[in-house]
Length: 195
Image 1 (tube, helix red, strand yellow):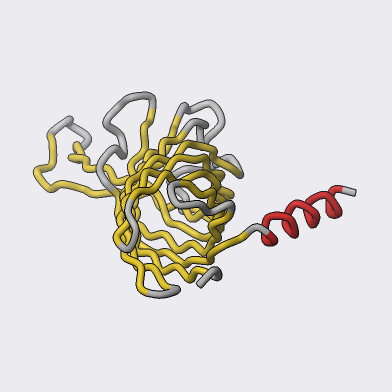
Image 2 (cartoon, helix red, strand yellow):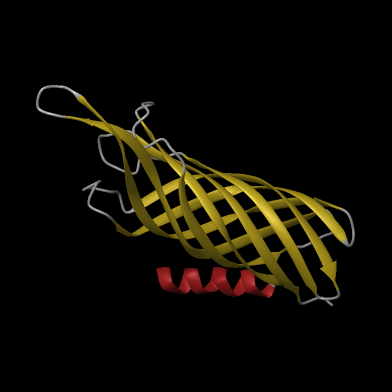
């Protein structure tokens, strides 16, 4: 029964789709670990998504996308020896976390051939893999998306750039109060079916 409901929602959504897109870019993330400075330096990852716009009008549309992304955190530490002396060599550790990603939300747009837009929505990250620095990760993370974008339309195609902020609402580990906050700079190619 669940599969039939999911299939029905998918068919109805695709029926109202106006455009499909692919976007890829640089994901800058850091861990918020109990409001401490552990792994709170920017980590450089990536994001690749495919999606669709639907219920598209001149100033508004809804969107949904799926993809993969790499998030994490980077920490800078000075190691001490057994006598408490600080080693002057800076040690850099990274935490790598790979997710599949589902986004949905809305765009509010202005302009005709050159469009600017505000994006808002929600995301759900599903864990694919991680390194051993964090042993127990939850299988999912949920959060909010906000962003600004700029696109240029030529016939049926649109070329754009997005600047998004992903604010983590849920802890990624049980009991440690660790959240991931990320910035994303994306390049986007869209094909509009209506032209």
